[in-house]
Image (cartoon, rainbow, N blue to C red; front, side):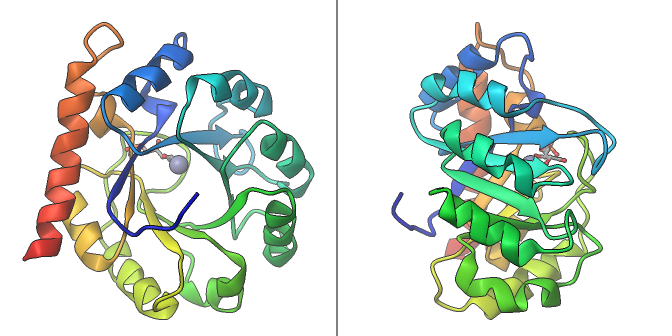
Length: 231
Ligand code: DX5
Ligand code: ZN
């Protein structure tokens, strides 16, 4: 997985048809997405429950590109190995999930996956100041984690700008997760984000039988994000 800071669109399958994940992954990749974002929720760290490592195992053969696994679970450390062996390319853990995020990130890298750290909207950037040599991705949550379809929290734009300055020229992705639409995509790309997670904005209006809509949604997000960079 080579580093590039070009805009990447990562549909969250949280907004896909839960009875048809394999075909949904094939459809979004065929329609031009860059990464596939998988939201793992435990009903404890967040108020919702989705799926676990076995689902990732089942999905892996249906995803040709990057499988980006976002763990909204606590505790997290004891599950890292099973998500890594499911074939996750990137595993992201929340800084708020356990007392020892440094150890968690060490474990993710030791598993062979790229390591991501996620920050809830209320979490400050000082939490990651001493972790920059241990992460491949910083996920800025622009909604409170747990559900798709929530409203984008604008105060997080300034956080993205600050993180972008803090990482300088290090090869670290800045991912934005929650409420990304054609309206908010330009704001986050101009602030320095390169990976845009989008659930509702990719899957709305489409289906595996009508996947072209996914393609036009993905292109609209990418165009909106890229346009903000050429201004
Ligand atoms: C929220 C999840 C997000 C969510 C994004 O807890 O981490 O990935 O699915 O969904 P939208 O794009 O609908 O806000
Ligand atoms: Zn997510």
